[in-house]
Length: 283
Length: 288
Image 1 (cartoon, rainbow over the protein chains, first blue to last red):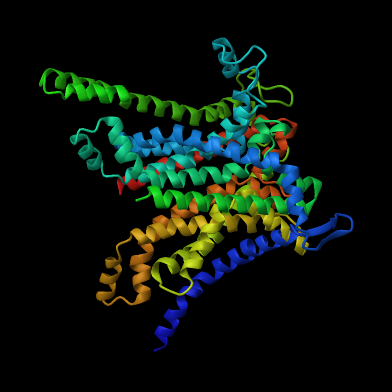
Image 2 (tube, rainbow over the protein chains, first blue to last red):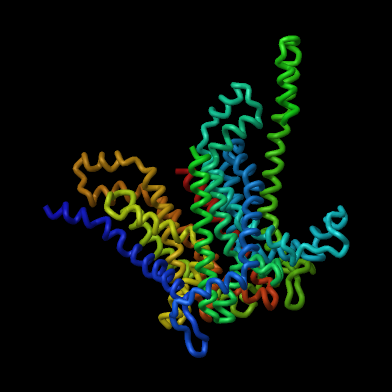
């Protein structure tokens, strides 16, 4: 019957439009990026593919600092987001009762104001004349001429803030799936609250921790908005360099090499991390 | 931690059987109360941290600012709310963002839903690579995705503008739609469809009368997510916009010159509309 033949082709038909879109505008651009990164020339004479590997070594030597800073900032921000977000995810999952949906809405709601506008609001909050700086000076944490704006601390705080929900939501999703009877069982077996958490709840929430840290780390490493608004050029990250090389300096090969390296570095980190978490801790 | 362990060990010593047990229990109760409240306290602080910038955005939409900057509080005023289009270019940028988000949502929801159906409902060769292809854009930093598209457009000599922004937005939204609709399809009870087939509904009738109504909430959720992501996208847009200015591009440009309070008005309005929409949706669903 013709029906069985049609059925065999149906999945491919369903995949075709979306798959084609992803192929033409994701896979092909990645290949173009790779080929651009191996070109040589100038904007005036045009860039030609000469398989110039030196673009990579030169880019790394020139922008090593920005690379390291990006991964450093992203790493610290991810850890901070985990420490800040985990208790809230825990409360929503186990202790919120009928307020659960309201609290979830409260976690998402701030993100209905544009990302850029919220970051600009942090610029007001952390400004030299603002109350945060004033309070920190009174307590003595900041010296009299100290400031928060234009420091690494402000940039990391901004990044942490921006990607916090990407941490909280997956944490909540995996905490919510834990059967509270496991924790009760641990306590019946004379585990104190801390031990019960550390030996039962935390290991069971690890899939959420892995998902949350990846969802926070990846966009954080490529960010350049927080540096622009809350930092100075001396805190510039790799995203800043890629942005300006492509759009201002118009040095496409270097920009492409940096972009491709960022992608590779993140892929390697992600695979290593997932494999480690996967074999040793996840189930 | 070490101290409490040793305390419990001595408490379990056979010399005193009842009293230390009671003390241990009340200590444990105290510890539990402290940790529980600590967790609640910490969570309240986290929510405050999440909302602090929103309060500032709302407050500064009412600022009676003078000059180009809107960074210090100078008194209450409704002037920006009464003249939301007062900053040159802000309203056209807003309209453009809504247009792009609407078009990108329609296209990405259609493409992504079809893929989700193929992945959940069919076994076919090439499923694993397809899943990988869907996952990759979500694991790619936006700078890389934006700059690789730019590299393509530069190499092909394509003029950047509305169309190239739309292409980028559809691209990053497809994966999110697939994941959302897939989750809904996977959680559906396949027996409902089998029952319809048993009752002599043909495949098309089953799809239209059983499957589609059941998946619709997932498709709506995916579309809302796609709209929100597209409306707020800056990084990919920044690489591929040419001279076309969306709302985030307007804010980015204004940040160099001084932000007009109308930006805060728009930010507040979008926030209020989105939250109200979510609350209404929840109430409607709760009533049903």
